[in-house]
Image (cartoon, rainbow, N blue to C red; front, top):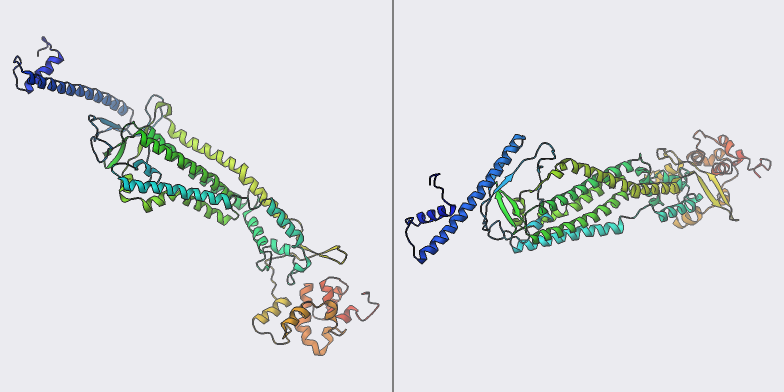
Length: 562
């Protein structure tokens, strides 16, 4: 119609309906024709209303596009919805086609603009697989298997926490251990019979010197060596390694909790309705989420968070109470392995259909409001603050007490004077004397004991060379081994060994070597050289009087020995 004669929209719709039915504008209709006319008019009215709505939405989108282009953002992409697709939707939908907007990230944070989309990328693990459990495109069988995998993941991780809580979360250097090592030090470590006949070092000195040739007290030596290598100061290797392990461990756990928050935030931001996926550029985008599926995902998130809290607590104790520096790295790797159980079980047992579906899912997008437009900066700051808090709590509550326990254990095991030996006389009185300090780098070769036993090992010992052969094991164990100084003196005449012609070989191969060994004086060549040791009451004095009695005055009452 001309502008001078405007027509009502209802008249336009009726005219369009008559034209569609090929009726004249003023022709009459029967009852059936009137019903058809009314239905056609209703359809045309709906089409007109839909067209007006689409035009209005396009106008708003174009205005938003123009505004964002002026701000230097990326060009908006427009993609039409894929509706009524039974493959990707829980139920058919009768909604009209709509236009969805996907924007890029804004380069700056302004209070009056809409922030960038921050997405959660689905991980191929048993936890994220809950999003597709029960979906029509997965099927019942694969959904049941996914539920079983989720239960297996929970069971494995909780079992690890239980085992760690039983055997690996107790301080190995507690008060009972310190007390037991103290009694070992008092009762055993300084006994005279535990002094080495070769190096003349006490058992305590050999243990704390990490003597590899110890025949007993091996566990005490191992404890001392572990504490020494780990250290008990803040500059020690163990403390630094433990701190680095905790930083990495806490960072890993914070990243896991961050994924949980992004996951649940992305699900909550989705519109409610029947769960529907749409395909965009080869990816499946979650468009709507039903309340039932959201509840199931929320329950899974709560369970996952609880399990991760238990792993965080027991994993921290697992690292703090690790005894050796070498085991710290292995234990840290073991904790990462426990966290990866969800990925391992999923990759091993998830059905192929479920894996392909989850792998094709696009990320969840979370559109920031103006109140949270600077979250790209706030999130890292929050994570750093959480890391600092966790490290402070771990240091003051666990690491430092464990370090002090190591120091107390070391002081009880290897503190104070190590170089003495004690014995108790017939009246119960304690006697003590100084012993030689153990030196691992000292060369014990050339001593009589070493040469004698070494020659027997090599099969080079004759019947009377550097060692005397005994045909009877009973005599060796009871007669020879228990022989006293008086009994040993009765088998030799009161003559110097270097003056006995028929025993000259004994002097050169045994007597001189024994005196050199016990005195530490390798310059002894004859009995005249042992005079400074004759009046001593220690082992060098005893051996000097046994092998050189004449020089030492054993045959004279005026020598001062009596």
